[in-house]
Image (cartoon, rainbow, N blue to C red; front, top):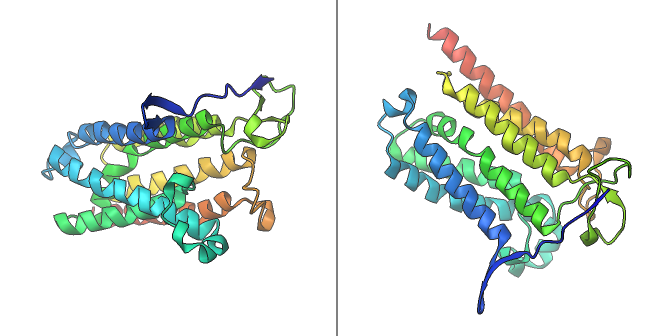
Length: 268
């Protein structure tokens, strides 16, 4: 059995300036996206369509806005709507914590749609480019969660070699380090599978559909090891809010993938 190392959440302190590890993981996520997207546009399917690094930089700018605004509003609407209805002044107080992946995803989808419209490109062309570049950023975010000792897992059998006590939980209960499970599944494993899948020419929309299905499935499984939010607990069918949000995500991904295959077959 292990005990969480209790990292100092502040990575760099220069006088009054304090840089938190969690902030650095966001920077790592955006930098990783840029590097991967720059590699992706060199692949024939995108190089032939005139993609440039400047276009990637512009897309990243809109994506960052989508992540931050969507992530925050998603947390407000999905997890604590009653609280923020009575405390509207705290909705934009992101420094107090509270971001939701599914809200960030909706924000990024909106940002991609706007960017595609501005560039005169098909939405799925942009989405297919972006999708394989995202999981590494998600992995970085889970490392930030682990460093902060937050979003810990459910109680684990003490005999589990990697069961871990998270002092922030207020108990000495051994728990699953679910942040590391999510880092491995919806981060690195999803990246490897999706990057491999996207290396070959695929029907437009298929890569984006695979991302939605893959993330939804991996997150759904990981949620069985993650402690539900104390203010929500488990919902209908003993599923967490994260699991319920993954259901429409997987359905939509399957729809996108199926439509892509159908369109490719009809065009032959």
